[in-house]
Image (cartoon, rainbow, N blue to C red; front, side):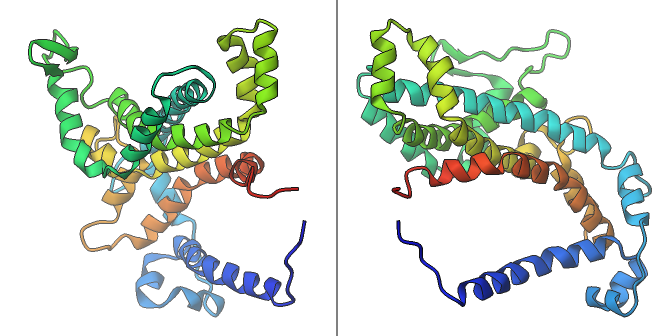
Length: 302
């Protein structure tokens, strides 16, 4: 295998890394600056006038005049939303990818093409129909496809305005990409290994659990990182389906409200942003080695 090297490669990479890091570093500095310093001078003056404080993080975590209760309920709402909304599409996509790859499914290629085509459908086009389905159900003439599941006490659909709504919505939107990625990766599983298991009398359930899933862990981890970060950073779907209350709304809703009408809370917004990115960063670094393997498998021939 030929390795491409150049003396300037390290210099170019270092410059790009520094330029990419400067905005993030400026936000980090701003999150520790008091309001009077933030509005009176640029963040770079911290090197000559290091006026730093932890009051911004204290206000974000404990609440105050802006949003009583602080970021904590929204933080846990995001965790409750993101974990199931990551597990559900991965589980369904793994089973679908296995079936399309290794089971005799009539018209599998057309099913896969339809799944790939769904990736080009803008999410915005599906928001109103999906919201209407959650609120009133969905029927094809007299045949109920999705019942309303109304609460007998309130008369409101049980699928409206709660975590279940977000789990279903994020699962629906994630499935096309997840199925396609796992299908491509699953096709690289050694055919001889799968055929040997079938000759030995192993069922599809056994092969899926004991052979297929362990071999596709890098791809599963890649999808998990993409999906978790997508759900964690989502605001549009959350606001559309559950509103912005602290009972259900995720952390992004808190950030949007904290910004204020004229951006007067930048010092608090930057502090809240760094609190918000703690979990995605932890997930990424924990699964980084699987992520790299999942993206590079098959790209380099040894």
